[in-house]
Image (cartoon, rainbow over all chains, first blue to last red; front, side, top):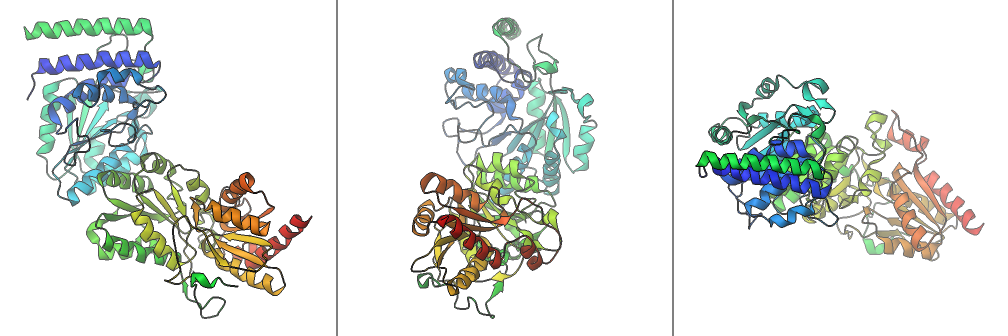
Length: 282
Length: 331
């Protein structure tokens, strides 16, 4: 790994704070998934992916497609910290005229790869890029982040079948397995288990990780790189709302933004976490 | 009379006129587009023979992607390939694409503004025996209301080929409406064609009505114009193959010249070419308008001729509409 675990934890913590600030300023947005996936996004942008923030269209870049577009606050915050645009722009989330639309739009902000929000369509697009890249013998990797809830969508499974049939080994999917969706827990709304068996049945390689463990995230991607005959899905077990005690594991926070009081509490908790990271380092 | 400037087929009105389905012209155009540009790829949802994308598959097997009966990913895989830099043509029946995958097209093709071409085959009641479920009558309404999307209904196989070639290079999301049946080839390879430019195919000295048509029913409009001409009723017939962007200038000029309009399409009256024309004319030059199209109904099994007759989309119906609109104009 290029960065130490502590370095990555510090970056992730800063990103979480910006996510809270952004959502407060916007007055609406999706807290739970954004906080839950912060560690995966940090690992992708700061450790794993090959890209140039000053040249978002660089043709050999790794692609990251965010299928569950509603968690875009964490993508925007991570991209800002990674140098795509100033952190100060984050406060424009969801405001009129912003580049940071409520659900990410390809034409508004360089680096997004595609528009998303309506669930179930990201994987197929990732598969399309991966297929085209292989036609042209390109070496970059296509990452696709999906939520667990969006596995309710039929078109997601059409894409799973397509990728499996075509042995798209340059396609690596990370599922945000946080067990929640809008109306409740995934296993109550529309049970997904055994999720790994379902992917295996379509010819995929499956890995399970703790979505908050940087070593596991990085190792899983490296493992995926070594699998040549099939696409890989990394089922990342995450805590929705991770880092903010009153948000963790509460499906009510899927589509809610914190108010001033809640945001202040959240930031205090994240500050405490930051101090503990520092302590571990020392 | 037939507009000589357009160098239309010499066989118009003759028994020996060439008969080809527009999907055939599309299939050939797709191959030629593929020859001209290596970025062109074709995707199909288990209908390659019916959509004529089999011709591309034979010529360029490495650039043809079969997705199975899965129209949603037909659109989104293509969208991904387009963001990468390919020029994808997606192929299925129009009821399924854009019917089933309309939202995927909206979000990943139109909102992304990527150059995916949607070829919607088997439109209109003339699909015939397969029945209502397969007779797409709402596709123009669906696609013209979508921002960034172009919408073209070629009148014959030759025009379909030209439309396909031009669409391949226009860099925009584009919908091409195609038909199953053999229909009269009324244009020639020399007939000028440009997406977005309507052509006046039948001219008169003092036209009383402008008949504005799209798709193979343009031939019925010509038959009607000829018949009306014999009875002393002069008309102008426009080939408005591009419903979006509509050639507003030509259409307004036609309304100004003639003072009345009849629109003709093998599509629901609601939301198709007729609606597009009436939007423009209401704003710019309101004239009485009659609509030939499907009167808010589903189709059914039957031969295409039986169905076009039953649902009022033949030359006889156009003639009646012309007479009616003249009465309204003079009323």
